Length: 517
Image (cartoon, rainbow, N blue to C red; front, side):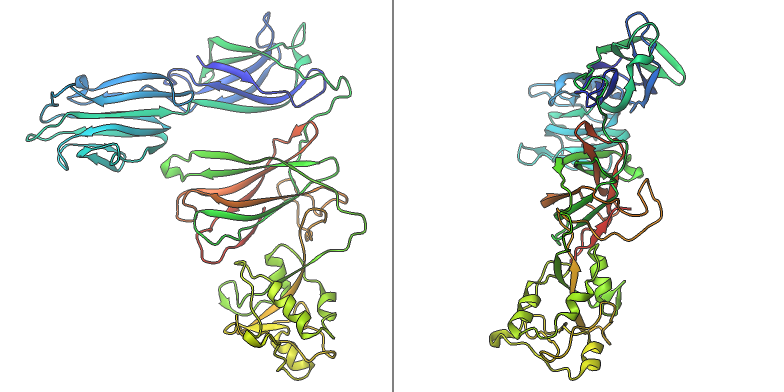
């Protein structure tokens, strides 16, 4: 039977409607449990309010040993281990100066997810060993040389013990911890559906297949009635769009802004989590951590003109040496090129052009430097056709910290947003509509996809959050899949529906712009 059933604060302020997180700890063993059944009811009839949720069981069991030496191995429960996690001490320690025997062997199966931590190891180096999955631990190890904790994926993992015929040691001790907690979010559960009276308690039963046990654990329902009949509920919607631009460039680290657009009026805030999923071959365990529990949004200012962010185009498009147009460069940043800004370049002074160049950043966050010590602007293209063919204003890719190039002053505007330089040597200076708090990102019309509207609704809230060197676990290496998880909310709570931003390849020299699907 499960234990420690609890309910978080009710985010729905209406009477007899509950939106909250239900949490509990797994039964001591789940060898005969395939799921947990959650009901809303009352003492007269625990299931009166109907089935609220079926929560799959992880399959936790006590470690079990097979092999000739199992009677010599101790497996003992560690109660309240590691801040509420369940734990077991697994050891082969005769005690004192007594050594283990020659030719011992055993296999201990543990159920993850969990962690193995060795606290003692004294064996014949290389010949007597403990193997956890594909990691072998052997020798006379000290506190400084014991291995780091070993992550155990969801499912079964074998711990193998072996000693040969020659030399013996004092043995070994390992501690296996399991995070046995469960949580489930319920939304707008109607307590008035219970027979005879309003549901007053949550009831949790263990089940094997379709068969439910008789025993249950219960907790009183906390119904927030502060709004009375006029009480509201968290939204049942998904954010229209989420954008993230990783500006770090270093592997296993994220830095940059997250821009969020609400699905419609009434959405006033957002929450952001980082989710990492290991491959199925390792168990497929999902680990989440909260980055921002609440990001306040605000409406765009009425009639506000889009701000301009000047960026440097790239010399490659889709892996081919083909210089970007400004349309492509801005789209890579989730924005649109502002044609009027290019037209307005006619008549700009050298100093003004240099300021635009040196204030612009490319996709890795780097900015060019114009003119070296002379601090002047090169204007070598002659005539509108030639300047526009080269993509003026531009910088030659070999002159990143030497010369910036423009057209003759007072006569020629910049090339149009869609103009592509004649070769990949020329990187364009491009004006893009900035995406920021207080203005609506420029979103193209798209087909409906995962509850996303064909176009962003008018007067919806925008949220902005910034990551600073947030570590992630081995992304892009065929291991963990990493993604941002965003939920939109109102004054009553957050939606259970999620918008994902998948991060497939962060271990690159040049960071990439990523947007939600």
